[in-house]
Amino acid sequence: MTVFIIRRLMQSVLVVFVMSFLVFSGVNLVGDPVEMMVNDEADQAERERVIKAMGLDKPWYVQYGLFVSKAVQGELGKSFTYGEESLGIIVQRMPATFELALAALLMAIIIGIPFGVFAGLRPEARTSRVIMAGSILGFSLPTFWVGLMFIMVFAVMLGWLPSTGRGDTVDVAGIPVSFLTMDGLSHLFLPALNLALFKISLVIRLARAGTREVVHQDYIKFARAKGLSTKRVIFVHLMKNIMIPVVTVLGLEFGGLIAFSVVTETVFAWPGMGKLIIDSIQGLDRPVIVAYLMIIVLVFVIINLVVDVLYSILDPRVRLQDVKA
Image (tube, rainbow, N blue to C red; front, side, top):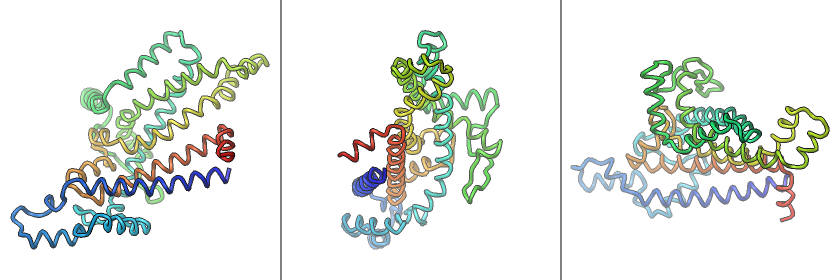
């Protein structure tokens, strides 16, 4: 197990290094932030002063070297727009985005797995067909449109839930969270459900496919022949095996929830990282863009590492094959 984790860690470090080069190079090829920050009437001396102050007078590879050396120390550059450390600005918005993503992931698990298992155990039932039809809608409907419909129905027409903002928050170990207050939960529910719809549909189909495959295996038939209860067969024997692909996909999808929550955060005015990155792209705030992308890369790498470890726990053959390799 130790060898397996060490190999994955080494691969993760290599991925982070390569991605840092690609992200930094790509961002530096887009636009000129000086044009966004300097008045049109400014003279050439003023422009050169701003360029030197932002370090844009150096070759890109020198800028990249400085970026890597500072990144190792936890410094990802100062925002051109805010004049503060870009990492600090992102960290302030990070709890809101992570809370939204975790709530959406929890909804996908709580709703998707039971519905998928039910549809797999009783594929011909009318309820199962309704569930699968609903999963197709979840895949098909655009996120921004569903969000607007949620706001119109539940916030405007019925007045049950608020449509924007994060609501009341409480500090937990210095981190503001909203799910511990009723007002915060009411603000969290709609954006989290909107973000979770695609993932719910995905989990339903994964769980159904896994159930249909596993339910006909010999060990399930043997467990039933031994007289085990249906609950024990499902929760002990069936669930453990269908969770292998579900855990893998959910781990990767959690990173996607964090990275691609921009639309949901914009529609519901959720104060997370998504709105920040949109504003930074419009203002060509390179340090914030690079810092955001690097954090997303780190999140994906860490999640992949955790998923690999969980996968190896659920299926020991994975780490045995890795050790032999």
